[in-house]
Length: 487
Image (cartoon, rainbow, N blue to C red; front, side, top):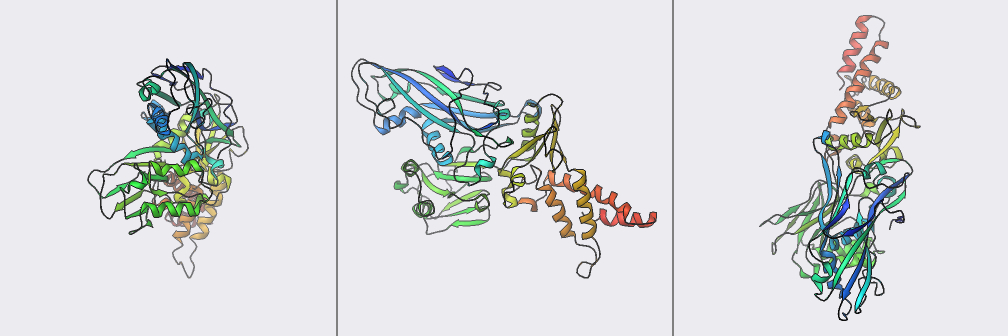
């Protein structure tokens, strides 16, 4: 469970909730030196009745939550082709609550509070009811190293928008004798950040596949893939499940077996998280582990016998493409001081996290300004304030890479024409530092635009280095051809 500070509300954070409330781009200001893992929404309700009404049942309390919906998006700018990230799109609070339990390890406040929360009885007159829901935008409770790379920076949060809507009085819709007026207090749920950060948000998506025995998620780091029906209803029976190329479940295993495995690997699961099977049938669940032990890729499930239509829900960190990665950097750079420059590097590389290449896209970016130590030390994406981002590798690292390429291309008994596999390793060692180096589920085995840019920089450096390897122009030209052909 994250230790979130929720006591610094957004400016104009208390809003009257009639039809819709929220924030536009530029309005959500979080304290400097923090990152935001959740947006905390405290609903302050004045509920009136002309006759005493008993406490709402749990089903009725959840129905109140279901009448309120929220959307959250990060706008990456018109100059980025209108790109935007939409992690939460019109999701009801009852679903957001369950998502937060799974992602943040954090349940809402006030659901079972019979004094000031949703579980209280209603006397004649006005009754004050308060409950708080956490909208997850950062922390991944199941990933051991989550604190190193999750959470939205204050700069990112300024480019986000939040909308909370309702079509009816949520209390009256459940109990006709109740009427309510509602205010919402919004605050960022923050933690201290050790470095500047571009965090990646977990997304939730509903997915269906009519009249089919298979259902697949988008490509990404999947934390939860569920069928939206109670597990006890057994709408999903024997099934096979693959994550990327890895078979993780096979016939005759069922969701009950998947859940039993999850409980065995996660004996400290909270009571709140255990309630999720009352509404969701687990297809794939990521158990708590270090990042490198996490599965990544598209999750595909196939039932042996289809007895119900798929109604899927997935919680995942998406695999961003080249345009999205560069738009994230460009948008962040617009928020830095005029005249400044930044370098964005892969957080796993900077923090020394030992993870596989296929997991590099899911750990976000660490940012250095040109006034800070580290700015000139690493390969990464460079961008000046208001400028266009591009791939860069420091001169000293290019020289080192060129020497390694020359050494790899020396004729040996084992490799008479040079070792081009070793040259690939030289390129990959530098490319791993650059966000966007991996944009495919197979990692660096599929060359990205970023990797191609890194390779071009190293190739040019190797050809330049070839000038030191010969005494005559002919020898220098031959060395340049040899090293240039290594890529």
